[in-house]
Length: 143
Image (tube, rainbow, N blue to C red; front, side, top):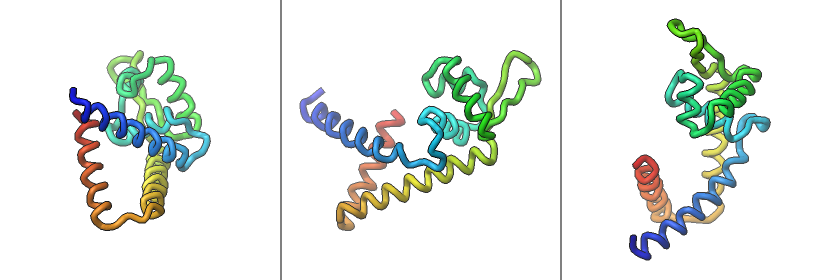
């Protein structure tokens, strides 16, 4: 790895960390944790999951995911669906209310980020660079 790549990685890490930290506090339901929002987001994007698969996807232990899902179920944001073939297995599915919470959180975060971009007084060229950077960051994240 070259010094240029290492320096760029460090600068990106710091910028993404700061940006994420500022956006993380913007959510539709203030009482939801980051872990709960992440689980809801995963269910929204990928559909119904077993508890163990959802835990694996979110890189947490099964007991941690069980606690997360319990909280979401109490709020009516997910439902548990018993597996038809294996009674020991339970699927978790996002509810319409859960979908609404995720959609509203995304809307609020996008709005906040747009406000933040507007506040730094950038021109059309800078905006094009941000679009390119977003595409490159997505490519790196999905590699």
